[in-house]
Image (cartoon, rainbow, N blue to C red; front, side, top):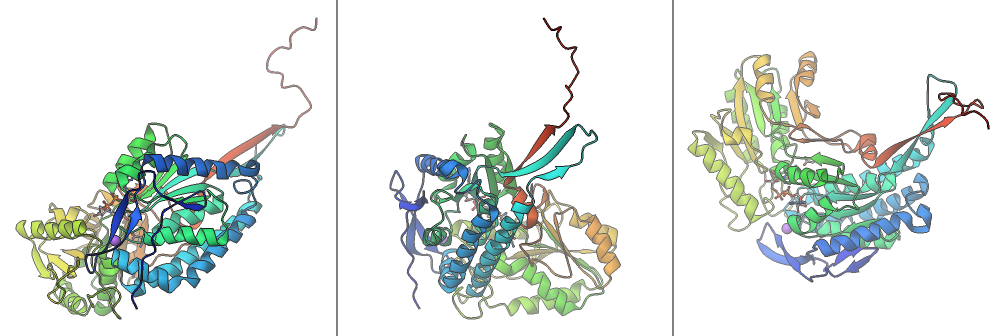
Length: 503
Ligand SMILES: NC(=O)C1=CN([C@@H]2O[C@H](COP(=O)(O)OP(=O)(O)OC[C@H]3O[C@@H](n4cnc5c(N)ncnc54)[C@H](O)[C@@H]3O)[C@@H](O)[C@H]2O)C=CC1
Ligand code: BAL
Ligand code: NA
């Protein structure tokens, strides 16, 4: 069934608005390289209008319509949005698959996760009401103190293309639950489903300006958000280079940021594993989402005693992955998102080769696919720790492999990176898994698996993978500001200064 891409404008103040400069950016289907539509290209002028709409949404009816409304009343909107997403699930999944190349079944799974994330933050919004005015115990009886949690204000949410709607919702749902007003700037490489979220918000009657969706290029639409004086916080997911630019811009006006950046995460496989189970988690950990995950466990560190056998297993599993158009039944690996990413990944593979690494499997365009940005699932061995392929994020279906002898050596290899997002260990010895868990320098540890992600648990990294945590109750705190209220309850005067003599 052919699917047509809706033609949308920017979603600002509850309505569709043409960008001031009337520019548009073509949408390319990475499986066919065809232009399938276009998205509006916002500039600083549109960001200005969106920020103004967001500020008005916060102060409308003295804040009672949104920021100061009960969490329970905001939760109703979040639940209504979740229901609409489920209603439109198959259409949204198809739109996402043709926009970013994600296998259709994965895209459908993401839509379930999107709805679940809205539902989860609806629950947390309801819980927020009971968490207001929590007393703080003080050491002086003459004072009483309590804490109020308030929305941070207007937030700018800048998101990537690998999970186009889900990464946006990890930010939008808690921001709205907290009572913030948001401006979402999705990636220009995959914005279709984020624009459809605008239509969903209109249909459920979300108050105007609470969520604004401003598509466009990073430097033109993202940068003005990051530096805007009336945006109170920026939450960003994307590359470390862009994260650093955003932090620099925000620092000029001491605007808080939370950054979820790249990774080069390890998966350590010990000698006591079931080889098939370990092989499946290893390939899922690196090739799911076409290998385009910030948390991809793209460095395999395998015990030398099983390495040869394990690599043979991996090759068999990898050859069984169906690489095809994302809409084809059973597809498990689609194209990477763009021509630019295709070139970048191919270059990294060829640099690895020229540095002396061996391409054990894959490394090319699949023979049966003449068009589209397809890359075979690739396994690279004979890797040195100084090589680019070991050190830099590929963001594509490329796994590099090293072996280890001792647990200490495995830990050293695992932590041999500037990044610190995720890590995984596969072993039947749970005490060993516990030791590895403590030793990993990363915000996320998977034991006997890699990648499953639940919106209840915190998500985020250390080192150059960024800081701050999304999801769970930590995700809500990202959008709340804590106000202490301290009251003097004694009838006695304070008595620090000698009272002036009574004239
Ligand atoms: N950690 C993650 O989830 C992601 C990491 N990446 C990494 O980044 C590499 C390049 O991909 P890109 O799409 O170029 O990622 P990017 O980090 O440049 O883009 C992410 C978002 O930031 C926006 N942006 C770009 N420049 C900006 C600026 N100066 N100010 C404000 N916003 C800006 C983009 O428009 C997009 O919405 C990938 O190869 C991968 O290594 C990419 C996407 C997601
Ligand atoms: N799997 C959730 C987000 C990411 O890895 O990019
Ligand atoms: Na696209």
